[in-house]
Amino acid sequence: MNSRHQKTLQAVFAKPTSAAIEWRKTELLLVAVGSQCVEGEGEGDGSRVSFLMNNHRLDLHRPHPGKEAKRYHVKDVQSFLVLIGVKP
Image (cartoon, rainbow, N blue to C red; front, side, top):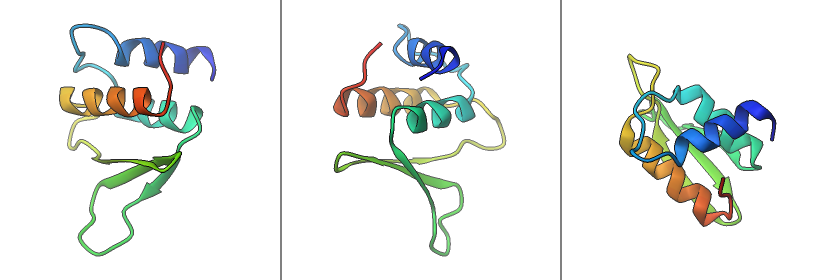
C-alpha cells in the first residue's frame, strides 16, 4: 500500500464520515489491500461492483453522475476493511 492509499485509508476512517472522497480512490484502496474487484456481469447490473476477500464480499454501486463516494459507501467500505482486518 503506497502513501496515496494510506491517505485514502485515513480519510475512510475519519470522523465525521466524509462525503468528499473520490470513489475511484476507494476502489484503488480496496484492491491495494488485496481484495478482488468483480464488475457486474449480468444484464441490468449497471454500475454494480463487488469486492471479494477472505470469503467476505462487499457489493456497491458506483456513484453517478458525480465522482464522490456517498457517506453510506464510505461507511460500507470502512466496515468491510475492519472485517478483513485492515485498520489505519
